[in-house]
Image (cartoon, rainbow, N blue to C red; front, side, top):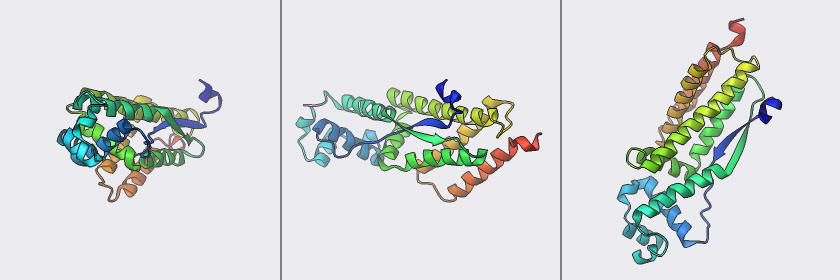
Length: 213
């Protein structure tokens, strides 16, 4: 891979940017549904309520969407497309704890971004009942695992960590990160910085190459 030839200086990851100043009514409806769905749950938002919030008639919505389900599908598609359209880079320079701290902080920053948080909140709740949301959640979980794999494989192959069972380390790390991110969505952030620091410290200590040398 090209990244490996360069020493994997950067890890691609995903960010979502929603332009709230879009000029099309269709996109405005999607974005309003995103905001309301995050606050109250998609199932509670009727087309009439959406129209009232948007300051248009309910009939006007049907000029853009055949029905409510078509609007929900468009919301998921719109957000998924935007999620894949932009990438950021995480430097893999420094010791293991520095690299992992940098990656975790980036993920937290993305989840704390208002529109991204709305999107993820909807995906987390709707995944239980909506097949498309379930597929998106599965993809996002796999993406986090994939990014964790690249991080830990790089740190291990460069001697900054000593990991014998990479799959186990990836599952341990990514599951912990997923829990921290879910808490961020729920705004259960009391002591989270300390807990993340402690986890990373213990994780790096467990896989510290110098201790196993």
